[in-house]
Image (cartoon, rainbow, N blue to C red):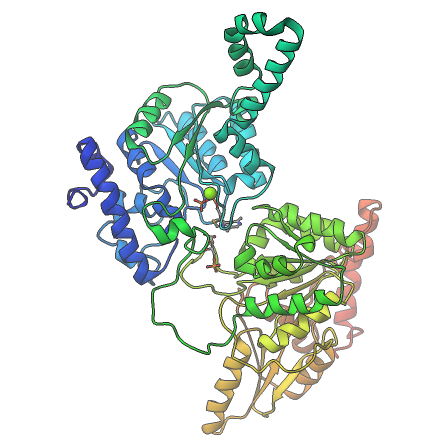
Length: 619
Ligand SMILES: Cc1ncc(C[n+]2csc(CCOP(=O)(O)OP(=O)(O)O)c2C)c(N)n1
Ligand SMILES: CC(=O)[C@@H](O)[C@H](O)COP(=O)(O)O
Ligand SMILES: [Mg+2]
C-alpha cells in the first residue's frame, strides 16, 4: 500500500511514477469508503485525485500556498497533507471539516465553502507574500462552475493587471453541481474541442481558395496555420485578461500534469492552466451521474413513507401556482436540484432560469423581470443569498419590486458547517425597508406563505429549513395569510414563547412537558418576522411579565431583537432608540435629512425632554 507511506507532501516527492498511479487508486478507494459512511462531496473529490498528487509533487505547501475554490473537492488534498488518520471524522461533530479551514491545518491556505473566491484570495496571498518578503508559489484551483461567478473575473482582472506570478488552475469537468451552463461554459467547450480554431481555419481556407485558387492555397498552408493560431489563440479570453493560457491538458495524466506544473512554476506573470477532468473519475456510478454524486448522504437502509422535504413542498407548490399563472417564473443560481427548481424546469422550461453561480445577477435579473410585471421567485440557499445583499436592497426593496425569495437551507444545515449554515437571513433581511420576512412552522404553512408572497405584490422572503417537514397532511387549498398576523397555538398564563420557523413545534413540545409540572405556557407561531404582529404583541406585553423568543437564526439582529426593540422603548421604558426610520430616506440637504429623522441636537433634545417630562406616553 503506497498510501501507508504517505502522510505529507514531502512523502509524495519520494515516490516512483508507478507508485504515484497506485497512490491515486488507493486514495479513490479510501475516499469512497469514508464518504459512504460520513456523506460528503464525492464526485468532485474523485475528479481531482491526479491533479492533487501532481500539485503536491511539484509544489511544497505550506511554503507554496494552494487555494481550493469552494473546497468541496479538497478530500485528496486533506488526506495528503497530514489528515489521513483523521479523515474518517470528515464532517462529523468535532471531526475535520468538509472544506479547507485555516483553523484546521497550516496546509489549508484559505478557508472556502462559497464559490469563486479562490483567485481573489490567492492574489491577496501572493501580494502579501511579496510585501512580507516571503518566498513561495501561490496557486488557485477553480472549477468551471465557479468560473461562472463574477468574483472570479474580478480576481482575474486584477491579477492580469498586477502581473504577479500567480498560477490559476482551471479544473474543467463541464459540470457545476448539474451540467455547467452559460456562455463561459460554451467557450471552454470550444477551447477543448478546438471548435473556434476549426471554424476560423475553414473560413480562411474558403477565402484563400476563392481569391488565389487551389495552387496558391497549398503554398499558403504553412502561413495559414501561423495566422489562424495568431488570430485565434486558444484561451484568448484569458490572454486578453493578462494571463498566459496553457492547455487544455489531461487532468488525469500524472506525468503530463507534473511536467506542465513544473514548467509553469518557472514562468513569470499570471498563468492559467486549463485542465480537463472527469467529475466522479474512477467510480462508475459517479462518472455516470456526477450530479447525483456531487453531494451524497451517508449510506443507510432506505426508509419508507418519510415526510417530504421543505424543498419538495416548495417545488410542488410553485408548480401548482404556476399552472394557473403564466407570470410565475423560477430562478436559481446553479442549484436546480438543491432548490427543487429542476422539477419546475421540467414543467415550465420557458419560465425557468439557471443563471450559473451568480447570485447577485440572479437577484437583479429577477428585479428586471418584476419590473415588467412577471412574478419572479428566486430559489436560493440562505447562505448564498448573502452574496446578493446589495442587490436585495438597491434593486428590489428600494424600488419595491415584487421579487419573491424562497430561501432554502435557512437555519442550521448540519455537516456542511459554518460556511453553509443559514444563520443570518432574518437579521440581514428584517432591517431592509419594504420587505416582508416570513418563516412557516411546517410544510403546510410553507405552501400558504409562498402563495401569499407571490400574490402580495411586495418584496417578500419566505425562509425554510434544510430537510424534511413533519408529515403534515397537505389537504387545504392554497390560501392567503394576512401579512403580519401571528397564530396563538396554545394558551397558558405563566409565560409566553414567541417562536418562528422550525422551533415552533419544539416550543409546543416544551410547553406540553412544562404543563406536566404545573407550568402553563402560551405558544405563539410568529410566522412573520417583518412586520411583527404589533396588535398581538401589545396584548402579550400587557398580559405577560415573561416573554421568550426563539428562532433558528443568530439572536443578534434577528426575530428576538425585533421584539426587544419593539418592547424596550414602550414597555420597559428604559431604552429609547433614535436613528433612521424603517424606510428609505430620499435625497436632500444632509443636515436637513438629519433633522427630519431627529438625530441632530434639536431632535435629541426634544426627545429627551419629552421622555423626562413624561410627554412620551408608554403604551
Ligand atoms: C456562492 C456559492 N453559490 C453556490 C454554491 C453551491 N455550489 C457548491 S459546488 C458548486 C458547483 C461548483 O462547480 P465547479 O466549480 O465546476 O466544481 P466541480 O464540482 O465541478 O469540481 C456549487 C454551485 C457555493 N458553494 N457557493
Ligand atoms: C459545496 C456546496 O456548496 C454545495 O454542494 C452544498 O454543500 C449543497 O448543500 P445541500 O446538501 O444542503 O444541498
Ligand atoms: Mg466543474
